Length: 400
Image (cartoon, rainbow, N blue to C red):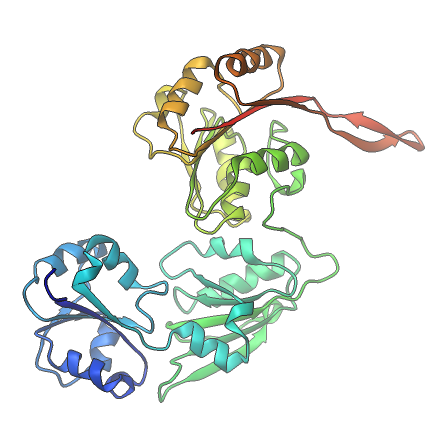
């Protein structure tokens, strides 16, 4: 293996003075330095050739590869491997060719300023990503440290908190931490009006009102949290369905016949970076699913207009598949063929015809077949009685 030629250096607001002597020597010896405008300002008075982030940013890897054989330094903010460019580069270039030089991260600095233990907070980023994805982490007494996208992000998050009954949450915007222009802005979500610098980190101490919306990340959100036409996987059955699907970090779900998106959204909420593709032929239900995904903190839900099994062609291989609509043997066979090893498949049926299909599939392919019955207490005149929901036949199996 050849010696590393690429150095990815974390730099803070204190610039070159804040680097370890060995790291500073690497930067000073570089032939080419790549970084954003603020990174170049923080590393002034060097003789190296300067390159800005390429446009589009996806061209970064080819730009770096074109410099192979020269002494190259990429400047990043703080820790290059914590919600930063270093991880992206390391996935595309042999890590044996790279040396990482971490600096204190914004999370570490913010936790120190707030007096919070990093082990007890959620560290999130919405930098260059949909701000709505932080909604899934709004919980009573939760503490959040959030890398923001710009000056407007704290106000957007304050609105999310207030709308969900967390308006009393304490918010602190921390800007230019560790530099001469360090600034802090404190306030409550419900009355947030501060104008803050574009480059900032947000700390949120979530405080719930008595009537706050409780949205746990474990599956089984109340049905009325979802916009729908009434056709959806109901709360109790949804919880059992997600348990069989087993959400995992970064895993991909195909939600076939996703309707209002309840299963796909709960899948994405249940595990960090979980992804979902919803296949739904009806435009009105796709609209419900898109609105629900934004409201419940899963804005990256991908929705596809199509009929199965044809709509499955060309999709990324899934780690789990839920068939809530469009059930047929052809759909099952196409889905099963695409499912990754150790993947989970769950199919639910409420009609006699789809139940018969599940029974036949179970006989042919094995797995577990169960019938789920739920009854809810509802008023019967001045008294209370049990009102049954439609029973659901559920078939599940794991690909070995």
